[in-house]
Image (cartoon, rainbow, N blue to C red; front, side):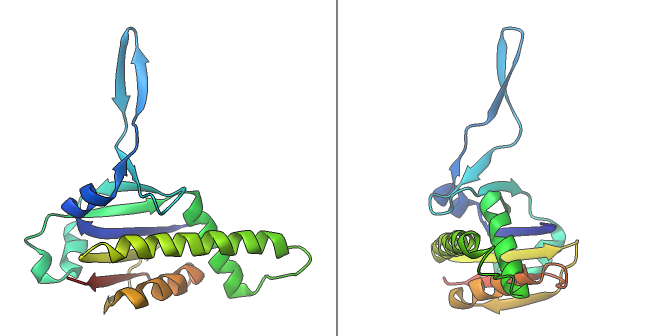
Length: 175
């Protein structure tokens, strides 16, 4: 999957909802130390890893001006479940539903896709303000204001067309 999917959210919301994973440790002689950045998980999104990045000026410029006073972060979404979700959406787009070859695989992929969407919907529903960010090949197209009910279908459509889209930022303000 050659795309970047993430959520822009307040630091306080990230600290409240995402659980840090244990960091990798290394030994140097008798000394043991942690390496790498802290990664996070969300209980409703299995096999998904979140990593935190500072919010760039470019992304900040796309967000509502009322969010400027908030301490916002970019939370990148990655992991096996996301790759499976993207693969499933691609199959749906190209109708690769050969009943003899893909029946079991598609049932499992559809179940995983629904788990991913439900978990993401659950997370977004707990955020008073956030933005979903999807970029493919460093391209970014539309910035849209949307509600929670429209966010997942927008993401689904984007994931079906990763090679053809310019990406989007979907601003969601439920507060």
